[in-house]
Length: 160
Length: 476
Image 1 (cartoon, chains in turn red, cyan):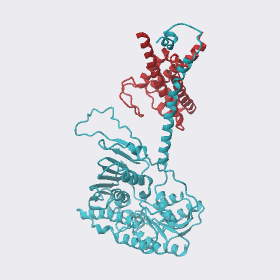
Image 2 (cartoon, chains in turn yellow, green):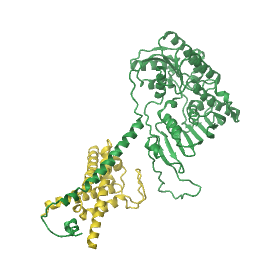
Image 3 (tube, chains in turn orange, brown):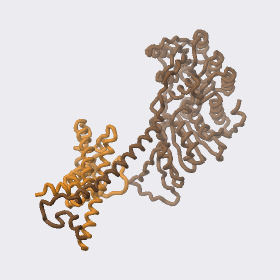
């Protein structure tokens, strides 16, 4: 009994965590979609660190930039929906992690880097992107969507 | 409790396969829907809020329709005349009929040429009296001649039955400025003085909403402002267009160099404190809703040669006011040797600070809330100011806030975007006043008040002591 109860609470906690991350992704995507002419250029331009060359090249190359911007906006939106609905949750989680890795590599928070788009709070190497990434890893390797989520049905229908 | 087991995902319970999808599965799948619903609701609220904010920002001004055409003439087609002309070319229903300038071979030709390009069939005149004689269907005249000519031009135009937009300063002497006010009263014609900030949407917003209605910055105790300008060479001219000495003399100039640089000469202009300071000191009087009681000033020709710069290239001034809320002191400086930090007016109240400038480039309207002041959320929601921007401590700083320091206040922006020529709204206000749809924003009396305030600065510098204003001085 005790174990069951704690299992259930764990599931609820994971569902809540998943939906909050989903909400955040969804709004990040929708907010960009709603801004006419939103572009990733500003973010990419201030890239620091070893990959900054690639990111700046993306910002400087209009065709690449528009693809990157579109991928980012729709990617964030789709991942957000997936996480909230619990639909293809594992794929959505790993995709989210991939996006966050790219964001972090673009603007790594190493000592001595200063960004012109200001960040709130104080960070040393670990920022909220990394925390969100770790949280998504938890979502990816657990099965909250089979507790609450579309995956529950998908799983039942398609499992062998 | 027994069916709770079914709730848990397969992995954590059993390895059964091929289970049927039941009602509970659907319910638990659909639990996500209310979350999406909530998201949609919040999003829609935000979209509405943003839309409303945007609407107040742009003022949602209805484009005018069915305006009557106005016939106008420009007297004085020099640098300032050109600025006004370019602004007027962006105003609909204005028909240019005539231009007058004594520099017939250069300024006049240039202005007529430009207006011809815009399909205005204009006549050019050297003498404004000839213009007044021959142009019979004018509604208004725009005067942008040197300050010492303003009175004669404005009075004659008013008496010829025309409405007049006259550049500031009203005149270089109060006597002559007074004659303009009297002529406007006598003829009943409209007279607008060119303190164009009086019609600037950002200034009007600050005065009406931020200061008057919301009283956001509280009681203003100190004001400071400046116009810092980089060194400028004397204005020259293409030698082949030199005006003859006889003609220059006829129009009150000693030489071509003086004609080009009249602003620096006593008896013709008023120097930088009048050319630049006048606009901003006018805002002091307007926003403080008071006239100064006294003025202390220091100034001189510190940098340029005195022979060609009779008026002071540097002036530092303190006005003393008695406002409705109590005493206020207002500092103003104009200097012409270093343009750093440009020009702005800074009103400091016990609840906040308002920094504003006509310039679109710098200081286009910031307002800082004092940490102890009541919150401004209501005014942010109403769109009077933008949401606050977080004041970040520089990461390099090692300074620790000590007890003498107060926390830096939040910065808000004045959310008025304005991308038109600076003079356009003021000219439009004048034209609409002629049509009877608006009141003048800077009528004769207001322009006169400012002239009294500003011309006293030069007197105070000369006197080297504090000068007092007699309250009757501002009245005619």
